[in-house]
Amino acid sequence: MRRGFWVALGLGAGATGAVIASRWTKKQARRVAPQTLVREAKSGLLDFSRLMSESLQEGKQAMAARERELRAELNGHDPANTASAASAASEDPAA
Image (cartoon, rainbow, N blue to C red; front, side, top):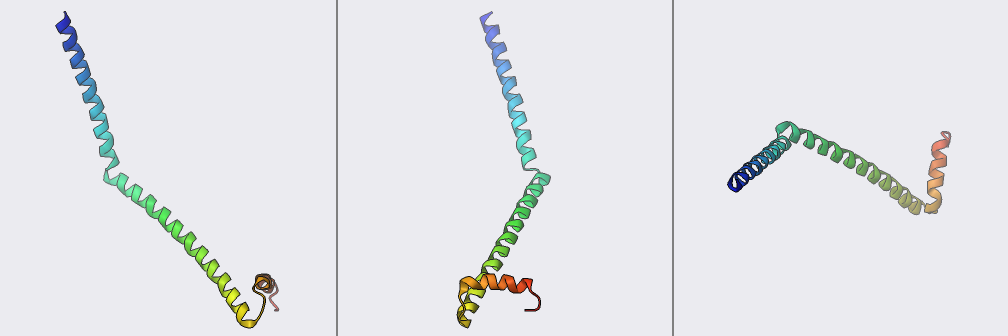
């Protein structure tokens, strides 16, 4: 009786382990499937391009602000007032 119990318990544990291992293996195979890798790479590239675009935009804005400051210093104006003068000039097309 005891021997049968342990044999059945061993077979059950072995079968359970085999099922768990099989599920894990299939999950890992799906993770590295070509379609999954392409989808993840595409997502990563889209995120990277968005970040690069935002970074370039911020860089251009900073560059334009610094250029206004330098031009104001070159012309002898107060750089703090240049930003307000530049925005006023962009609103008034006759100026």
